[in-house]
Amino acid sequence: MLADRIEGKWIDAFAAVFRLCKVTETETVAILSETQSRHLNVHLAELALQRLGAKVFHVVVPTPRQDAPVPVRSTGASSALTGQDAAIAGLAACAMVVDLTVDGLLHAPELPRVIAQGARLLMISNEHPEALERLVPAVRDKERVKKAIGLCKGAARMRVSSPAGTDLTIDMDGASTVGVWGWCDRPGSVAHWPAGLVVSFPAAGKVNGTLVLDAGDVNLTFKRYLERPVTLTIVDDYVTAIDGEGTDAELTRRYFAAWKDKDAYAVSHVGFGMNEGARYEALAMYDQRETNGTEVRAFAGNFLFSTGANEFAGRYTKGHFDIPVRGCTIALDGVPVVEEGSLVEDLR
Image (cartoon, rainbow, N blue to C red; front, side, top):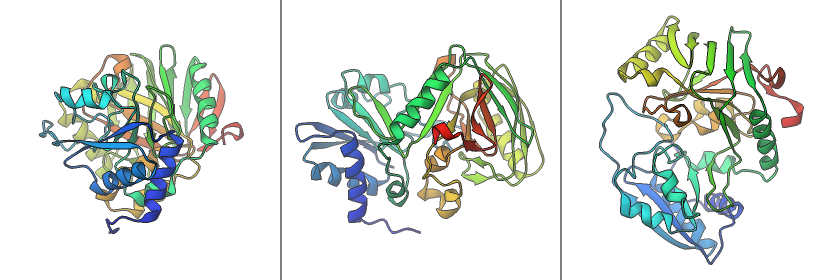
């Protein structure tokens, strides 16, 4: 167990990221948290912003009641601001919002209202600051990620294959592609830290094929390395069969079924990690309560597959899996961007 105390080096890390966000002494910055947020990170954010001379205030809301049949983990769609109109108005009036809610506002329906007047938003993932310290973004990452975004936006088809048996095709027509390099420095921009990944949200009916989650791949909803393969058959976006034996297949079937919601079985986003400093093995180094798994989402060369909400396909659900898959080749219109789990040279 890591000690939850203030460390000067962690204030330094937070301040470095806020500098990349171009925080100035003339700005008002709101720190948004909830009662179940990681208070150590809330305190570090406050101290770092004060070091930079920003005008800082806190918005703290009660963590909402549970309304799901199973535990909900790391969806990127916090419900902390549901019905909190006054809080949203206060956040929207700021130059910048530091999002320290448990799940984050990236996919929350309230996000557009928070940034509508130009506030930029940095979601700091619910990680122990030791991980955040290791993953302070680098300036060079911005151009690499932007290049990958351009390649995805310009492609008509993504194909994902692997020696384990994956053969997945994504029609990119109508897809919405975003990338994150770790800081927000423009009005209305949104980012998260840790960062270093590109994801596309396909339009409805665009994903078909077979995805094999091999032993050693990671189910981040369960914070678990798979011990045995699980094969997902996907037809017009929806997982129609879950094949495999053992605990991993059983957990997957049960969690999908628990939602009693067809859209929980649908594809949310597809993409790949680009963070050369992020470590695949990091999940083994932290207790489950100490990590949100964002680092493992971003490690370079993984195929990041997700099920659940996809607003660009008109689907909304709290059922959610994020699964980084290793060893894949990802090709855009036949040209690889990832080869057997490694980024091509032009994107390194």
